[in-house]
Image (cartoon, rainbow, N blue to C red; front, side, top):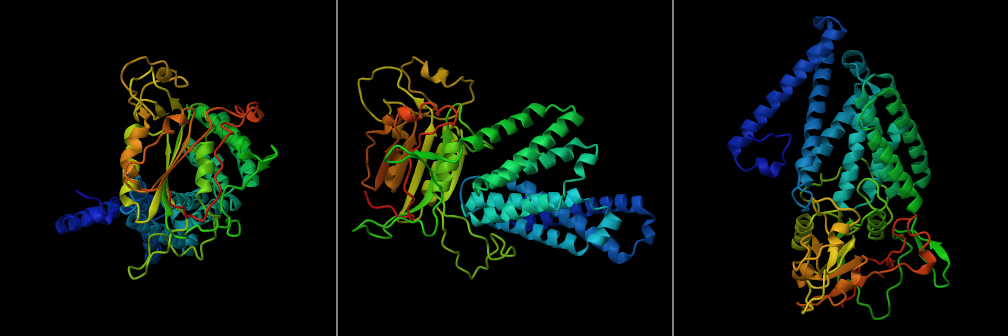
Length: 490
């Protein structure tokens, strides 16, 4: 039986009978839970008959909205990560419920404090989930304005000290919610290049982890200390440094500013091709990362974005456009961020992006991965004979040794060979290979006559940067000029 508050409306529309029955079932389930919670709360606060009907209804409505919001939020995990059409209506409904919940607790705060016993950390949890919604909407759309919305909610939690009383309660799970909030806030600040705020948050997170590990003897102490180490290494590795023509180090801003677009070259045709979709893939060993976002992925995703702007109003919820309105033109190309994907996962996302690529558009594939070299000489020199880059596998490996030491006549099954990308050259394709075996893609064949660009990284560090290579992750990057989203025909 389908659950009305867990699955997108497209699924529920399959059968009218199932839709009606699932609605009744979900409503009755929520009503029973709300009624049970209401009785528990009311009985702890005094005689149930002494509570005015209006206040009773306020608590009932709040419990209903809270339960419904949690079910919708948990249902987001079931949405496919690829494809751009199935998720938007579900996100819109989730935003709608959380907007109602947020306004409701603001309008009825006194009643909820007295009759429900509303805690400040519960308000913070609602605000944190709204921030998460905006952040995940940014991941789905690549529109950086939603990062500002996530930042505003996360910042309000910190300024209003919603989680300040959590440490006084003997409940480690509440402290973990606070720590996760800090980790998510740090990611958003990193993406917005608010490094001063990041440093303050890291200090606060460090103090919170120390207090948490001192008070509770839990099994996740090592994991939280590792989080601190990762974010410290990430901050140290960024911002990106490039060498100027005179070998001086210059710190650059990754995103494209409105006034920073380079002029088009003479004779370049405007609007011929547009960069519409991008796969940003990171699978390097011993790479600096934070929250499944490596340094090179972090830099590349920002190079494909314009500087964020504030939304006109918080009430303009994503996914809630009227059917008569035409969707606004996307400012940034849509991106998939894949951290250590398997070959099948990479191919699934690649096929989805290829399928949904608009006309006169380009698909960009950025591969930052450990090189996979051929095990021996081959009689032929085909697209599967020079190795490629590594994809993830379920077996244990130490620095890729299991792959490099293989001595078999068969091709490496966890390698993305140049020939694996040939089917996708049926549409305009832009490939960037940042790997120790980038030369495997040197003779990439254009089989279908479509526009094709293949940029390859150097396979060794320049001597000037060898000393800081280990400290800064992978310091040598391909530096692309920020464009206006228009690619020339090749």
